[in-house]
Amino acid sequence: GGGAGARRLAEDDEEAGPTEASHTALPHMGDRRRTPTKGDDWLAPHVVSQLAGILLQHGCVPADSAALLNLQLSSVPGPSRIGIALLVGLNVLMWVMLCIDLVRGDPPDGELPWRYELGVWSGDYGARGLVGIGTMWLCHADVGHLTGNTFGWLAFGLIILLGHGPKTLGALFLGSNFVVGVTCWFTMGDKTITCGASGVVFCWFFFVICVGLMKVLGVPPNPGCHKMMVCTCLGKWCHPRQCMWTPRVVRELAVALGVAVIFGSLIFGIFPNPGKPEVSWQGHAAGAFAGTLGACIIGRRMRRQLKVERAAAKRRKELANGK
Image 1: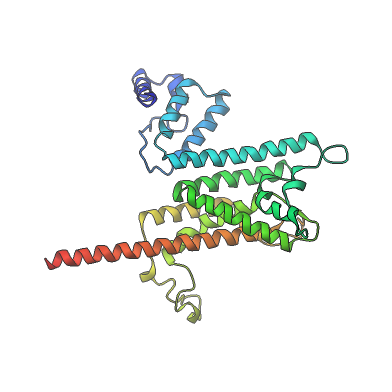
Image 2: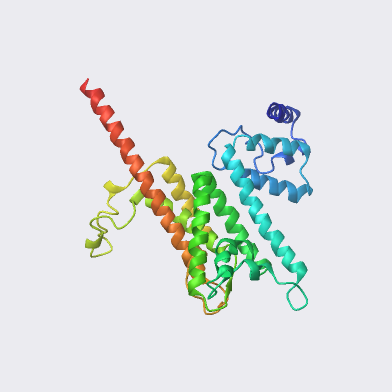
């Protein structure tokens, strides 16, 4: 089928030497070409990076490049492929709606922008305000607003999708929409319209930052935390014997560190900014709360499962030694 043909194509390229086609087929891998395996968390972002490089270089995707990209994507599990398509598709939908707004223009000469119809109307506790809770993420104020959200939407969405699966990503999306929408509905000034996917982006950002720590240390406060008197005495919560380390947790902590270094300035978005009164810091803070809460739930579930597995392994070892 197509996979076998792509493999033969890759082998032919290697035998034929460094031709222009074989060089541009995998612009970011070079001689380190490998056959991907299931469970490669880096794979989908890597393929997206390749696709972007090819489009920038050629303006299209050559046939040989498309075959090799499809070969790599074939190793991504089916639900993840569907999740990636939905993630990118929803972002494209946001851009389409913004372009429609830009073409239609604003009143009185143009039509009413989408944000007036789909945003959250604070102080309006009727049907119009209620509908905005579920649709505010679709519409944005301007190009700069959506551009800033697009990077976080795709980056954090891919990290969660490939690390925790589409169900976790979907639950965080729905939960953050509800928490952010209700918060903006009740806390913003009367007749204030709040729109944008910033709340969802902040939810995903704080989830990525916190989930590894919650898995290692557990969810605070554990018994003994309230007894800490100085910073060097953190109670039972941070005691080394309470820590649970697995290879997956180490990877998640490494990803969290990288995200914190690159996007760390987002943390300041959850605080009021007198210089930008139009920015809804309440929505950002609500999204951060939803993401942290999700990290606590996932972390606690993982620790319970790991404790059961370790207890069972210890019991099996004791039985084996007894025999």
